[in-house]
Length: 478
Ligand SMILES: [Zn+2]
Image (tube, rainbow, N blue to C red):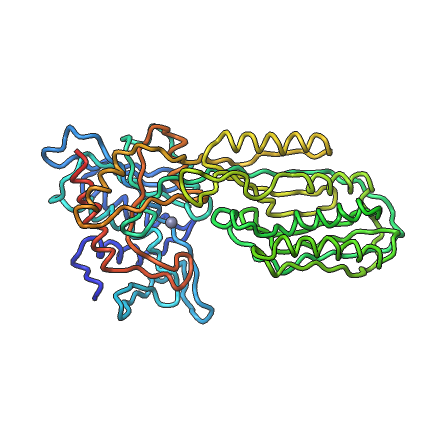
């Protein structure tokens, strides 16, 4: 198998790999698409973030068909092996094909996520022999860093009510639902007082963590929530304590694996440790099959001149002990799909405030609303303030989809059965659904593996076949 540049989709994929296009660095590739549209005489628009929207008229006989929108993101995740001296700002990717027919980039990500989708659109725009309804090709930017390009679009930007998103692989698979989300900051201002009590550090270690979209249903431990529980159970055991600082987790969208809490108490080390061991043993049993590496450890710390007041310490611990977290709802329609969850991903103690960074995910916005409301109600009891940050829509499963049935039919004609998938992660499709609620959306793409790592590879046979299937789907949209 060679990478045959006489095929249009291969030619254009190769073009994308010559132009560096990591997230926030899409201008050059965006301009390439603009030039391409201009040379072909197509109507186009490039917005201030460098999203590009290109219209191609229907092929003869399809003029009266409902328009179809194709969409892919043009940014890629820049990752390279430690020994690679690749410069992602300047160097073209170095492509090669392995013995099994997979396309790779030497030492770096390949950017088939989502260069394969962009290449499909350019190939379709460049091919006047294809049959299709009026087409709009939308090239979005900054998908990988928070769906930013998609979120900059407006309802009136979409020239149709059918959309094929080309950012999902599998050749016979299509996504039918994705989660929306809301970032929430929960903040408590701090009052401190002089301290002469001994200080201790509680460390939570050994948890598995993982992405809060894909893995929240696995009942893994959340280090922040577990630390709060251990501290709460100390106080239920009669041990008075005040916090000095609480820190845990690294990213709001990752299940936190570690937490470090410094606190002071007049109670003897042995008594505090005994309480810790009791709770630790209980948690170990609860997590035996989901997160077996969990451990908690208490050590004596250096003296601390200040402590957070006992009242505020108790408010913080009680809030975190009670706050809803983890899997909330699962779908009974789509097997294994989480339909609502929360992740208290990060806790930071600053000079005068403590901040909990939470991410709510749900395919249905009423779930998100209710969970925000619960966090707020609880916050009002314990003196916290809740700040709701960026929010994006979910894509809830819809029973009926004309596009999905066309794809099913085209695959069936080739003896293949369509596989429907749903994700608890966020996708651009959710943003589009939020903008145009009656949009019929499917996702489609070739088989690829190792996205976001230097092992990323694209199955070239599947790249060819999926392109044929996609163009057949368009020909069947009439
Ligand atoms: Zn992608």
